[in-house]
Structure formats: C-alpha cells, structure tokens
Image: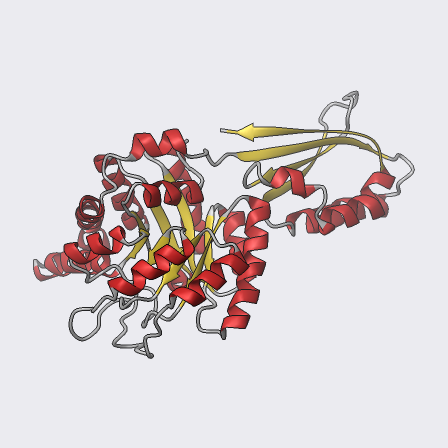
Length: 391
C-alpha cells in the first residue's frame, strides 16, 4: 500500500533536488495514464484534484478511484486537494481520502490569509495531513488560461514568505515568481533571484502552480532554487484533446472510440515531465524514507443501559453518528448490533480514521467529548475500545 505521507514525500524531493509532479486529473483516463507513467518510470507522484474542476466530475466517485489506484500502486502516491475554497472543503476532502490539502486564500489581505491558513494547518496537524499555503497571485484558474482570467501577477516576497511560514506552519509554500495557469501571451519570464531568496528565507518545499508552458531549462532552474512540487494540467488536457480531434477527423462517432487514446496521451506527457523534473527512479528510496499512510479502525464495543427506552436508544445512535462524523479526519462512522443474543457486547461503533495521527487527539476533540460526557458514558454501562491499523 504505497499511499505515503505527502509532507515526507515533498521533503525528500526538496532535500534531493528534484520535483514531484502534482498532476491534475478530471477522469479515470487521466488517473490511469498518470499512475501508469509513474509506475513505468518508478517515480513518486501526486494525484491532484482541483475544486475548480469539480463541475467536470463527481468528486466523491473520482476520489474513491484515486484511493483504490494509490493503494494498489507499487510506487509512492499522495492524493491532494488543490485550490480548495474553504476549511469545510478541506475537511470533506480528507474524509474522502486526501492526505494533502491546499485552501487558496492568496487573494485575501495578508492578515486574513494568515488567519485562515492557520485554521487549515491546525486541522491538518490533528489529522496528520500535509497543508500547502500560497502567497502571491498566479494569474488564471487551475486548468483555465490566464488569458481568460488575467488579473495582475503579484510576486511573492522573501520577507512576507518568511513571516507567512513562521506564523502558519505550512508544510509547503506555493509562490508566484512569474508562472501562470494555462496560457498567456509570450513565454513566462521567471524571477529566479527572487525564488532563491524565498527558498533561503523559508527552508521548506516550494510549489509552482502553472507548470504547463515552461521549458525544460526553466523547470530545472526552478528545482535548483527549492521547488519540490510542480502542478500540471493544461498540457495533458491539450494532448488528450488533440487525440480526440484526431479520432473525430477520422470519422469516429461514439465516445468510447473518440476517447480511447486519452490515457496513452496523458501517460506520454507525464513520463516526459518525470524525466525532466528528476523524479524518475526515486520510488524505492522514497518508500524507504516516508511514513506509510495507514487508516485506523477505532472499534468501540459496548452494552447500552437496558433502562433506555426506544426513543433514548435511537437518540444515542443518531447523535453519535452526527457528532463523530463531524470530527475532521474521520472517514466513516458505522453503528452495529450483535447478531448473537449471548454476545459479550451487544452494540458497537466502527469509526474509520484517515491516519493514526488522529488517534491521540480524537478523544479530546470537542465533538467527541461533548457526546461522550453528555450522553454516551451515561448510557453505555460496559465498554471496551481497540484501534487497528488498516493495510
């Protein structure tokens, strides 16, 4: 199960001067092509889902496929929410299986950006999830051209980056040094001197948004100045689109045949990026040096007080479902009753945690303690709990 801690993955890339590709996907064809490329090149990879793309797919369904793909891969994989709009979106993404999140508050005044990012980091820390922050403005939207959403490029400064990292505790920092999302007029002009100063000031993995359109030499210079993660989508989407047009021009009419080359087009482009960014052949050492991302099943066996009437018993369960599911990092909650009348314990809660990092703080979370103190401990006369690592 090579789903690994994303912070560990990026720190390895940062220390060893290469970049991990964070490839945005919008379909199963993209997912398959990205993972196949990583397997072929023995490279770590990040499966990235941007909130701006949610209109193209059902987030919950595609996330489930990403989790399956990651768990059966032989190379290290992380799953990342990119450009989330809120803390609530990040919590939902973690519940679905993401082990890295980025909530984009870069357009806000610095004080507001700091405040909101700190909230995301505090939540992420409790779940063991890596948090990416962003400082500065990269024109365009993820997967949409700067030509359509130009805005004014706002560069990241080293002094602000140092303050931001110190006050938020983010695991990685997306910076603005001249790249754009999608296309713009002319070649991007990158400020390597600025990037070098930022890297020296913060000392954590740096992230580039808008990797499409950069030359091989530009990518290598970015990596030499601290970039350990490069976001990538537009060039993959265009390669897939070109293949679809080729089939359409050949007279193909049904969707299956029109899109049959998308997976291969994506694979080829991702393998090219892996070669340029230096992540090929790194899988084994990353796996040996990164913590595996293992879910935990919290099993709570109990006997409810026999004096509870039907309404009270139902309330005990319904309130538990509501309170326990509200805790960030809890992936699922299930209540069950024993099939055998003579079982030692007649009821149980099965609570799936995203990661073992959540175990210490779970019992102290207000949602749990309020439910336990006000209702559960009073109603559960006998109880025992055990935590099991899954996978």
